[in-house]
Image (cartoon, rainbow, N blue to C red; front, side, top):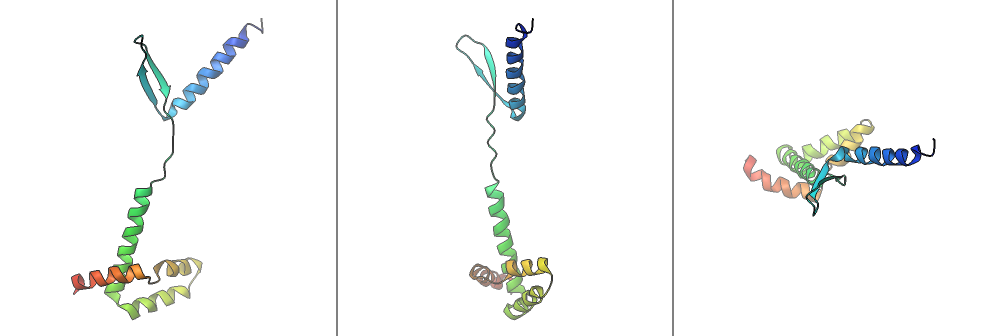
Length: 114
């Protein structure tokens, strides 16, 4: 009697495994005989590269705006005061230090600020 359940258990495991893979969606195809078959969609997690790029550009524009608004000496003083703080403030100072891209953006923004 136990031998009769082996094919059933294998089939049941295969169905459950396939059902679990269908959690990410299905792709329906029509066979040559007209039967509609649902197959699991292949899940390929993608990193949001475009969102990260927008975030970096926005951060650089923000740094450039601050650099242009405060001026070079005031900006350097504020970054120096951040370097004297806690570990998080030191990390912020490292991120906010003036770099060539920041100065180029600041020079482009200065005429707009007046």
